[in-house]
Amino acid sequence: MSLPNSNLRIKDLPENERPREKLTKYGAEVLSNAELLAILLRTGTKNESAIDIAYKLLKNQEGIGFILENKAEELSSIHGIGPAKAAQLKAAVELGRRLATQTYKKEIFIRCSRDASNIVMEDMRYLKKEYMKAILLNIKCGLVGVEEISVGSINSSIVHPREVFVPAIKRSCASVILVHNHPSGDPTPSQEDINITKRLVEGGKILGIEVVDHIIIGDGKYVSLKDKGLF
Image 1: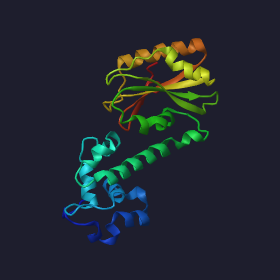
Image 2: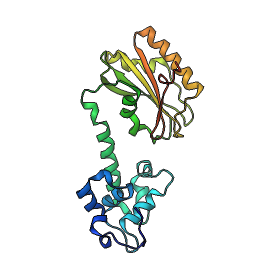
Image 3: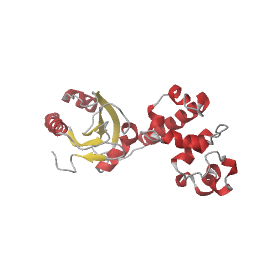
């Protein structure tokens, strides 16, 4: 959605083009990111509508991820935001994050790499350092939990087998899926990723805990080393 006049107020738009009215009539899924942000912002300034401010936020390199990456104090320094609107935006992002992980409370099963990536994607896609996590599974491939294993530099993560398997042993898990992110947003596996995977697969065999897969998370996309036949 684009505005022909940057000073046009939302209430000056036709009723069926106003974000709140569109959401009520058609559902939130039809709204653009800018329109959703405008609803959260509620009001603009003397010279900018809420949608204008939303577009300004989205022009940053990270797009909507800009809200996730920056603290409320940093957001509030943007003209037209202020402390109250910054708090509203951060609260909305946190609610979305918690909703994305709410499925942990229900018994869910991991049948493929997409199932596994969906569990961690929203938590890991914007991270600026490499995080290694283990998705813990029971004998029926039911989700037991997700454990953080290590935090590395922006380029690499050093992982020892005991760090990976201790949580699985403590929780009597049958298997694990390794997951780590590439801060660049490109999930293409490196040779180091492949080598670490092979080492952990061998360690798991000794302990009787299967390493089902190693999934690399990028920005909204992932690569499964198992699917690629890399181990």
